[in-house]
Image (tube, rainbow over all chains, first blue to last red; front, side):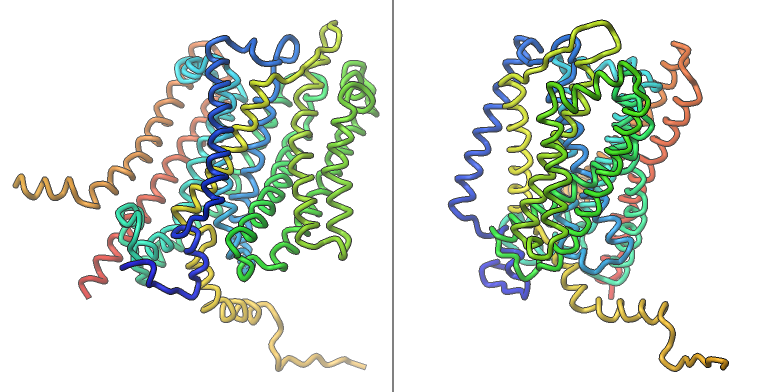
Length: 448
Length: 86
């Protein structure tokens, strides 16, 4: 069947797959150039060693580990939001879940590569398989990230099957690929039941896996005795920060694709209002954890902890620290708690501020503690090199390219869930309301 | 006989089975890796309980994920067949 003659009521959702504008190619070319430059810098690092970076004693972790934690953090809201919204049967999730799940898949691949880049010699990764020690948080991390990536890929794929079947039935390009991936889906009752059951199991499974991933990443820091790292609050602090940055990234992605592909009918103001409220709540929660963490440190006044504390608050990293607070707390609270400013552009500004702020938070966590160890060294200096900066740019370009590539193959908004929402949602929601609201005939007699 | 084998090898279902088998290979690979790491932890006198607990959890998760995907793909195939029979 020729796709040009196939008109569906949700035709706009198919358009990105079948129509490609000139600006798509221009953007893709620019991003590929950035990516290739980063790849070339990596090859240079591979040849000349980690001396090409700004890492040195005592600051042995820099941009690569910061980006690793940052990208894995962003992955959280993907599967977590999609899973939690599905679990709570929030109807407004329908146009959001696909983009959230795609974010998770892409950033996990990008984030997972960063420790290998940080190794310098990538063949050293084989040591994990031969002589890894399971009592190390690094091994827990490897296991949990692999499990999370597998779970979230399956969680992306299963709800994608009905849409792949729609694409298969339309004919046109990639027909063979859609035939393979649709696995014969025809929308029969049995097939719908099987898919629904599997998605239900996965959405429950993926939540503890997602929480465990960032908790384990935090333990890479907090299980050491480095001042500023050895804290029991790190687990939940990292999870909250991850969800916070993930929601912000999701909002940015939604606003961009809404504008570019004209999804205004699907991604409405109400979706951004709800996500903006979630972002505000996470900002307040983040501030609470940050305040609790630093108050505890200050009250204890332990000398090596205070070196790190003062370095962040009034020392060399003070500009980054206060910029982080501005981006993560001031901007979101101002824009998201004020009705006049809580517009789509306002929510976009707050989200961009949060993404920047959360990257800075990772910087603030990683570098100051390493620069001020317990040993009697002077404060270490870390200045990122062009290699590290270009690899960060390449990672960002890879993220955008990944999304662009996905939009050429699969719908960015779940078409079958939108159709199901139109046909079934009103009935399903009123059935649920009838279950927990008192019936109309109920009369309460007041005894006077 | 050869014709049947050839048509099976070129068929859709064969490609789909190959794709599914990657997940089972991953689950098997992770199982072998984690067993090897438990063995290493025994050799170097590491904390056994943590190593075993993490391995058991990790292995179970991967096998459940592989099972879920197999259940779905077999279920979709069986659901399709019944529709054609009707």
